[in-house]
Length: 257
Image (cartoon, rainbow, N blue to C red; front, side, top):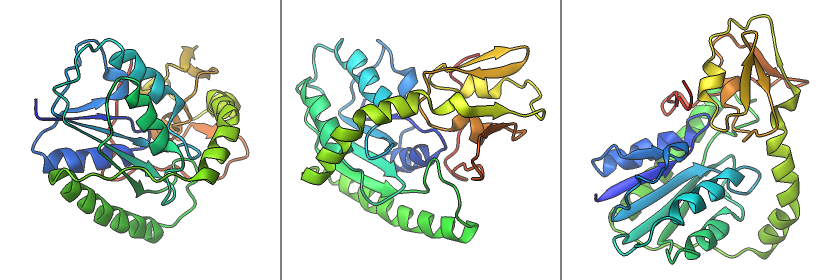
C-alpha cells in the first residue's frame, strides 16, 4: 500500500482535510482512529490528521496509537510520515512536538508537520460569511500541504518554550475537562430516540435509557452528539452557541450499532 491516513474528526474539519489529501493521492484509505485494530497494515506513506483540543492532541489519540503500534514489529516499510492538525487558531500548541515524541518511542520519525486553521470545535459564534473566509484560507493552506506531501518535503515542529510550559501545566485540567465535558448536557423533549448520538459517539460515553441518552465520564469533548442531533435535542447548559458541522467534510461515523 502506497498511502494511508489515520484520522479523527468530531465535526468534520479534520475529515475534510483528510478527504482532500487522500483525493490528491488517488486513494480512499482513510481509517478513523476507532477503526484501528490488529489488521492495520503500514503503508509507505502514512498521515495522521486530527483536531487540536486546548493546544494539545485529543488525549485518547495517544492511547490508541500506542495500542496499535506496540503490536507492530517491523516499521521498515514506512518511508514518510506526516501530521496535519486542525485548530481554531493558527497554532497547534505543543501537539506536534508531543506527537513526534510518541512516534519516536516506536522508532518512527515524523517527516512533516503542519496545521490548518478551522472553525473552533466548541465555540460557534461566527456568521456564515466569516466561516467562508476561514474555509477559503484553509483551502489555500491545504493546497500547500498537498504539494509539500507530494514532493515529500520535510517540515519539523518548532520548539516553543512557553507553549510547552502552558500545555504541561494544563494537562490535568484538559484531561478532567474533556472526560467530564458532557456532564452538564441536557436532553430536551425534542428527542425522538433516534439513537444517532449513541451510535456516533467515538468514546462510548453514551448509554440509552428509556429511549433517551445518558452521558457518563468518558467524553472526548468532540461535540459530535450535539452537532449531529437532527432534532437539536442535546444542549449544553448555559451555552448559547449554535450547532456546527463542516459543510463539506462532515461524514456520519458510526461507532456502534
